[in-house]
Image (cartoon, rainbow, N blue to C red; front, top):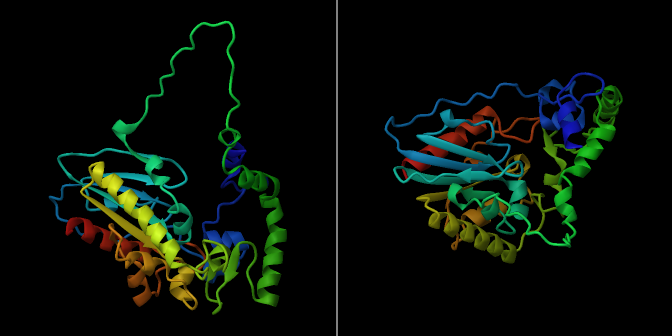
Length: 323
């Protein structure tokens, strides 16, 4: 299923599936004709302002917000990156440099991802890797085999891949676009996994508006859960400090709806960042965006704009070069 999905992705033929360059929320809602929701294809970040003699080994564990940021974006001599949920990251500690780990995570994934310490198995030091050598089985008359873990056999995204390969084809798009046009023009709402903002000027990811999902920005948040999240983050912090990092930073990227439609917000990010027991240093973009939200996110995409990304990079580079 994964191989078929990869072969069909971003092809304009009838059997393919067009990648929504106009914005992922535009693609989810099929509002391609509504130009005001479109984003530019180019990712342009402001040039970094760095001292020429910085001596930093930067490791960034992030997600789709940071996957296109290369080593030219950061004030670091060496740069290592891993994207959460896509692949693990094997990092190297350089004893001749200041080793810094930045953990970036979009708000909607915080409550799920940091409910445990799975990161410790996903971001590992190069000398901690276990050997893949398998010893030969001694000669014997009978060899018994244990049943494998069924979850390890199937791709964890099999349901999404199956749905994608059954229903997501370019030749069906005209019907979906017509339905989306009717929903938008007649009922003033978006289709699919996108929701039209209260002001009608942008699109939001539906799960971030849920009042029951961990991804929702108004889903009730208890002190107990916040304390548990902070305890997990402290465990992660202690682990990577012991592994050789001089500094470990946490950067939580707010949902667009958290910034533009904050009524009823559960306060997840400020509750974590201001927690008295939190041991990690925080790279706070939430306060910055809240004070000056204009243009920080695309109108038809879940991600920040070029301007929002550039603002984050300025803060990160300032933090790692002037600790």
